[in-house]
Amino acid sequence: MRLHKFCTKFQHSIVFLIELVLYVLCLAVFFLMFSIDNPEITSLSRTAAVTLSTFAIMLILLTFMYGRYDAGNRRWPQVALSVSITLFITDLITYLELSIMKTNEANNTTFRLENIGILFLVIIIQIFIICLLSYAGEVFYFWINPKEKCLIITGDIKNAGRIAAALSSFEKKYEISGIVSYDDPDLENKMVAADTMVMYELPVEERTGIVDFCYQNLKNIYFNPHIADILEQNARPVIVDDISMFSTRYHMITFEQRLVKRLMDTVISFVALVITSPIMIISAICIKRNDGGSIFFRQKRATVHGRVFEIIKFRTMRENVENYSSTEDDDRVTRVGRILRKYRIDELPQFVNILKGDMSLVGPRPEMLENVADYEKELPEFRYRLRMKAGLTGYAQIYGKYNTSSRDKLMLDLMYIENYSLVKDIQLLFQTILVLFKAEDSTSAFEAQPDHGNKR
Image (cartoon, rainbow, N blue to C red; front, side, top):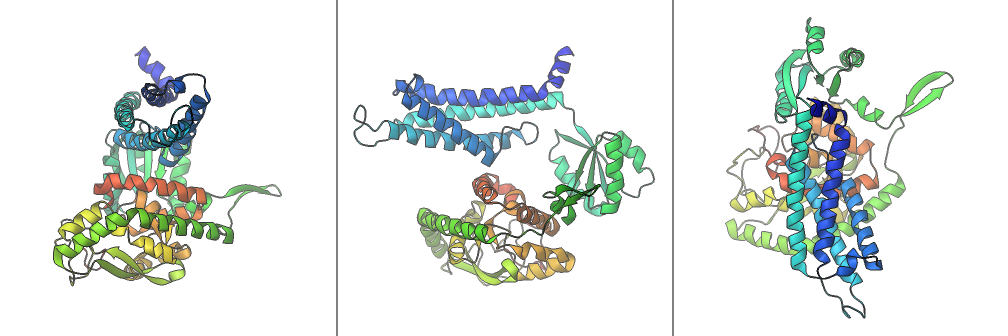
């Protein structure tokens, strides 16, 4: 009991200590293993200082890109994946730096890679350490923190199943105590019995009263945002005479930002086309041999200001099939197409669209024209996402799923637009790599809905 109280009091420090141990062990593995052939990296030397600096700088930068060791906030395999990719790239860059440092008159007169077998062994040992301590961190977190009793408060009971399913997928963290309408006469008593209020699809005016109650009674709050909430993210406090206010300005990407973004799009898409050309050639051959049909699929999509362009993708469905949304185990998808979709290879030809200027690397996903019309009937605000050029990747592609609702897609896209920065673009490009490891989540299909157009 005393141990539990002590750990509860210092849980943030203990989790930080586990994180620190993880990174120190991984660093030690790299240096100790490579010191077998390079003893100078564990002694006071210029090589050791430069190598250590490279490792530390890359670790800090990539942790910012992929996320830190946040036990309890994400499942341990997700934490382990993020940290593993961070350490893998850090190891690789530090390994190349070490090989360059060894190119001198005293060691290697010409550049050559150091023992690559040691690099693979380092990575394997590090992955074991990462998985072990990621799991240990999660076990510790949930030993200290009991499940949050969540009361779902909604304006539409029928649609509350979506948020209930999302919370249930984190069964260690959340326990649903009930689903209730905001106008329930017994709402206050039910809120008292819960730890956390999850407000979903709630009118803003009703949400305000519940937030006040939660603030008074020290209750946790989750709510899905409205457009006003997204604008408030960048609001700054101002005092007008003696009146406190928040100020938010009309936000549009500047000319300088557009210029740098376009330059980055051009350079990276060209390099990506060169690097992925072998994969695309093999994919094209497989598509052609599979059924003899066309290699590419073209479809009109909407981009910035509603401008229409023709998107290019590898064809993953049989030709001349009925046009409706993809479904699970869709028999229109070819055998080759299933592989291309699973690993996003069908998206690679879009680098041509980016090179042409039709798309950007990062931005709102370009929607089919039919979907844009349908979504705007339901959500007139959907047109706001056309304020920025469509992108190959973005918030909705990384954090959303194929069957994410149109409203949630809109909020994700507006979060990107209103919080735009070049640094954020770079971060999202790095995080796109993680999408390849969660193919089963992000490609979940709609149930058959023949009126929503065809994702091909």
